[in-house]
Amino acid sequence: MYPPIVTQCFKAYDIRGQVPTQLNEDISYRIGRALVSELQAKTFVVGQDMRLESPSLAAALMRGITEAGGDVIDIGLCGTEEVYFATSHHKVDGGVMITASHNPKGYNGMKLVKAESRPISGDTGLDAIRRRVEQGDLGGAAIEKGTVRQVFDKSPYIDHLLTYVDVGALKPLKILADPGNGAAGPVLQALAARLPLQWVFINENPDGTFPNGVPNPLLPENRELTQQALLSNSCDLGLAWDGDFDRCFFFDAKGRFIEGYYLVGLLAEMLLKSYPGSKIIHDPRLTWNTVDQVERSGGVPVLCKTGHAFIKERMRLEDAVYGGEMSAHHYFRDFAYCDSGMIPWLLVTALMSTTGKSLAQLVDERIEAYPCTGEINYRVNDVSATLQKVLDYYLPENPVIDRTDGVSVSFADWRFNLRGSNTEPLLRLNIEAKADKDMIWERLKELELLINVV
Image (cartoon, rainbow, N blue to C red; front, side, top):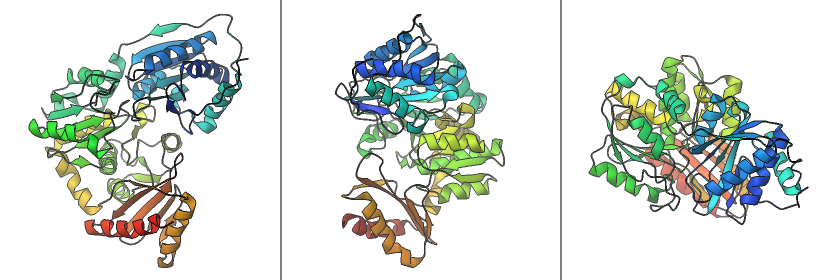
């Protein structure tokens, strides 16, 4: 038995915390031991992002796994989706990605999956692993220690990505690529060598000191470098990624940031041409455009609670070809039902090539038909009381109410979703309307008066 400890780094769907106060080598070692004991598993893929603490955390994790008798396939510096791919490709029992994604400097974490890259969340093993870690119940050391095998060759993963496009049909589009000094650079360089595209790279070298800020393109202030480089190089398309590149963000040729919401409908439409009649999973925050595009394309839209564990589970249940969240997570059946930050832009460049249309031309009509605010966060004293206050205000108007995630309130010409954060006293608001851009901002003022008066 190891001495009991208290952990703060275990969350509902992953592990995240400040290093070393909330996550350190001791906890990482214990997680490795507990993982083998709890899952009764033998072989794990382990990958790591570019954060400065990732190598030591990965080493401690692998020591824990091997001392418990497990074997490790170490894939080194990579993105989260490379762990997903390798876990399925090598047909092993699970995988762990050392990453804090877009969290601030000084944080790190882990994303865990079982066989077939099925997510490990609170109710599918993560809580049990946490209890073992905290109680020191790590199982006895194995009689025969496991092995670590390094497999740094990305070729099978790159080959798989290229199956999503007809490389010969791609036009020489000029693309501005900004990995933000995250882990995407090496993969982009490998793809660039095999694609007939023109590339302008900035911040392409992985660097855990984050000389240009933490890679999180959702923050408007983090988009300026991308936009400036795109415009100064007259590029056709701009792309940026978060640190572990499971999310990809798009900019049109004028440097305009395109909300992830509109990419969901666009990708669904594309995939339904190849897989007619298929089901498409989407989240409840913004829905009208997605439902419209899916139904127009002959597909079946399926509403699902926000969050990767819920989306992946529902995709398997429905055998959906694609799932999309407005937060720029895109999931693909042929990618073990997992999210990828590489497949979306490959599909979009293929569509731009075959149609001859710019990204703006592909999405402008949809943006006009269903304008949205994007997600806005509010810090409140009481999440549930504020939610109820807002609901009480609108109930006399007899809207359609849906409680799949938070509360969605729909009227004839506008709707909103309001949901509480799982981890903070925050309310997250999304508003959309039918062909009336002014209305969303009018309704926003109305809602903010309700939200801010607690």
